[in-house]
Amino acid sequence: MWCPHCRQDAPLVYRGVFAYCSACNEPRPPLSATSLNLAGRPSKVGGTASRVLGYGVLTAGLGTSVVLMLLFALLAPTSAMGYAVGIPLAIVSLIVGLALVYAGRRLHRSGADAEREARERALYGLAANRGGLLTALDGARSLNLSVASVEAVLTDWAKREPEHVSLEIDDDGAIFYLFSRPGERPETFGKRYRVEAEGRVRVLDAIEAQERESELDGDRSRERR
Image (cartoon, rainbow, N blue to C red; front, side, top):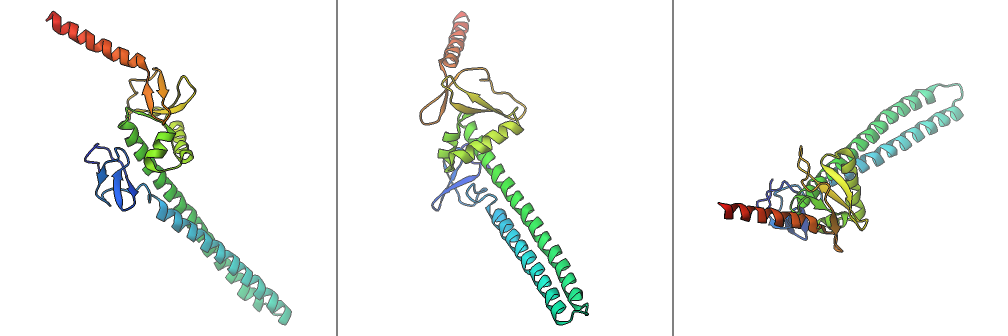
């Protein structure tokens, strides 16, 4: 659901029981959009539980089958009963255990993808409200995430879609990320930037001077008319 304030398709950030837009930080009704705090978490927890259960089935089933075969071999060395019981049990344990492990990995991967998608939507909406410029520190502070996790998402995004997200460095060596809409390039590409102490990015005076010059040209045109 789109935010009625900033018109961004951004998930919610919960602070206590109150929900806020992750892009503009304005209050929004709870449960009206995806929660950034919970995106992908149920799948990741379920995937972990499935893998633990799968490894448990493998350990218990294979261990039991080995014990049964050894026990029958000691009690009745000439009997094949131990193999008749132990081998089917081992096969069933392998099938069920490996299926649970595989399903758990897929479930955990889908949860990680959902979490990454929600964070990308939140970061994109946040950058859209800030002129297409964003630092990992600013994103972490706004979304209540660690700087390392935000930086990992932005760096991976820049590698996958360099035409939409570009990693830039300002004159002081600070890293920030430049966003564009799909199919477009930011008008500020090739300009110089400055990252402020709190992590926000500002375009240097060259762009402001260019804007003032454009305004003066417009005034001159109107005076000539």
